[in-house]
Length: 261
Image 1 (cartoon, rainbow, N blue to C red):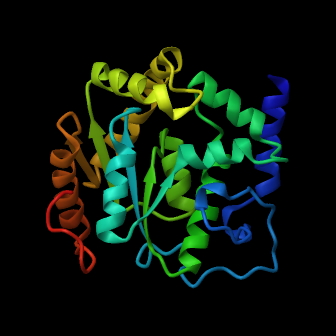
Image 2: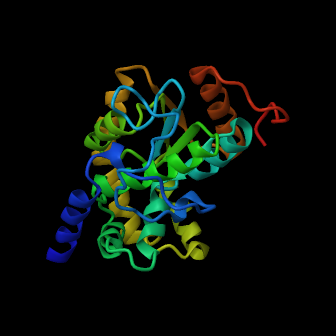
């Protein structure tokens, strides 16, 4: 455990302030981005903000997508990508990719937190997200769905203050019993270490305890779009699509279907 703590502290000391992080090496999938040390000689993207954040909210739209494990975050995000040209960034996928990246000094730290259903140090998650966003912005994309983040209020504050303020918080709600059934079924084929009953229950508990304050915080600023994800996916997505379109004032891309798939 001491080694895990040392790795967390080492990461914090290594990355330093968000704005000094160099863009990651070019890779096709954002989820495969390693965490790189700062390079002061690199220039910031044209989407950079003058307010101290890495990206300007007037040019970059961030939607946090929250919900218990199995609530349908990934499925709904994929449809939003298809309809509105969002970039879907899964905090969990980014962490799992970094965990499995050969030579990562944070692999054990991430693996331990995922196995225990606890939260990875926010410096690790936020830097991975910023790296992935920067690569997409450099390719001309500016709308982001951040799936499974923020998990705690301090993460929300840190990301909003250092990377980019969020524009919307999509919250998918579903009874725990239904989520457990979905995840146990998924676990038969997913190959994920945390798709087992013990880890799932820990994840439920962690989400409930830590995410409620995040949701209530953003509800106070009118940013929350909360929807029941118990019905079939098509029905849920129809509400998600309409809500996102209204809240952000955006239109589907040319050729997108007018109803859920």
